Image (tube, rainbow, N blue to C red):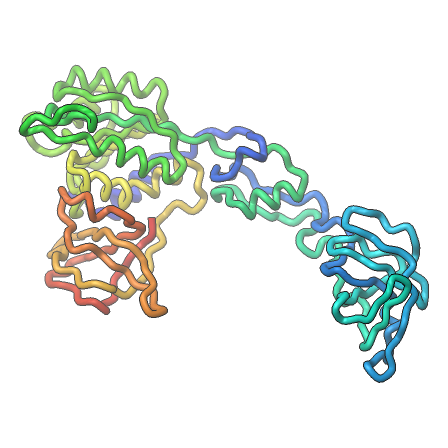
Length: 402
């Protein structure tokens, strides 16, 4: 069996990002940015007030105190979006609303609540320095600043910044299309009767959800019987519309585990067949020019673990992510792990939680190949290498988030 890190790196090196496209600003949230964004203008575009208050010359407030206040004449009121019409001279002030432009001649702003005011006058009880309470043009972003780098999934802050820069079309990577193929004569769909000896097709829906989580569109390639001819037909049909093929079942060593043979007959090389890990050991990764096919186990927990632990970095790279590898760090266990990996590597499904102000990794007790319930709310995996006995709560463990 190939070491899991070697398999992960080999698969990752075999893929390249899909093509790019430009889409409207309103549709870009959640997509992967395909080009660096350089600012072409200032944000904000003008000196502005951060408060409701008054703009004036700082020199006019020199020496002001509660005992010796300074009173200025109010010559104008400016709301956000308005253009000042008058210049601030010595002894005058302009009433401002939050976001309003700073009028010519003014170089300081005071809050309403720090003054005594009427419609015609404002009284200051302390001195202000030049530039105080003024948001300068370009204080957030200046022209020529690289504000975003390609390879990041666009979040709300990025959308807001793009809009602030006046960008209406955004370069993104195309959402990869993954075709999901179910195999096995024992599999029936969730809505069908369940005869004795059959199992419901949970893998199709689970794998689709796991792929959609990282930015894929998914389509079902149907269900193939356990014959090489049928498997080939489904694989070749899926290649016509998909960037990635994922099958579940048929990759072990039984007489009817024919997916690797079908992949070979369809022209795939199989650099990885079986990975030294539990669960998820049975697998076959196929590479064919610019296509990849992932043959995963038919056991639900095994297929999901293999996909998320070994395949996710390659799939994130295929989708255009700039940082696609797992970020592994050390965490403290919040529960005891009874079943460990022995002399191999075991991936433990769990989640990160905060207990009494401490960040912990907690793992359900049930972790077997057939136990899919432990994947509920799973957002992290613990890595056990050569651990032969139980790990008590409070022990340190390597984990990565998904």
